[in-house]
Image (cartoon, rainbow, N blue to C red; front, side, top):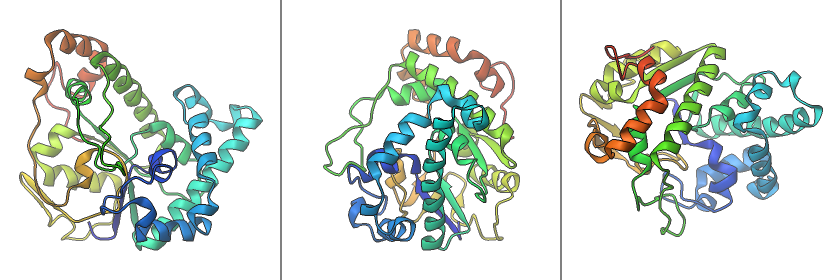
Length: 293
């Protein structure tokens, strides 16, 4: 969309993208991408001036599931935690401001899959956060995360593959993230929930509903690149994430139901049992589809 900048999974910038010089969505290594080098210069006076190792360590220390109560209400946290959190938030305050200035965008889309990271970001004064929780059937997620030898396109050496998880562990992670996402949505001034299946089936209407629900600035031609069954994407400077983030041009959309035959029956039953309340709540079991809320 015009005036919207996709940065990919910004939560991975310090622990992996910058530290390992991973490839940007534009195809260049992070250290050679003009966009990200300009962002670093604007935010910190250059990436060499930013203590990448320190910020990565703070992220691992602070944005943990067990610290959700502290991230929701920092006044309950020990003073040492609050001091580290302030340092961490100041880094991202400067980072978001620099991205907006360098890109000239009104909206920065951070696709980080970390509710704990976003719970922390809510504490940044003046940062207008609007939350979109895109959810997929847990059984489809479990099948996806069990696929072997999927190339990691942002790996600088071009040899790494995407991490895999066994279905039961994926089910537990999925449930935890969804509970945290519900907490995040309940505390955001503007938030929306969208199912992957509804997006793929009717992308134009799904995105129009999200734009309206999040009150995003959008002119009459904002979704001209979206068709029924396809979307045309330009190159972006998105970092990390799913291999599809590095695809540009016309992308055909189809509902991936491979898990119905590809996920072993025992694993399918286990994932269903472990995620049952949320599957029902999202409309995957027991009632008609949930749609966009």
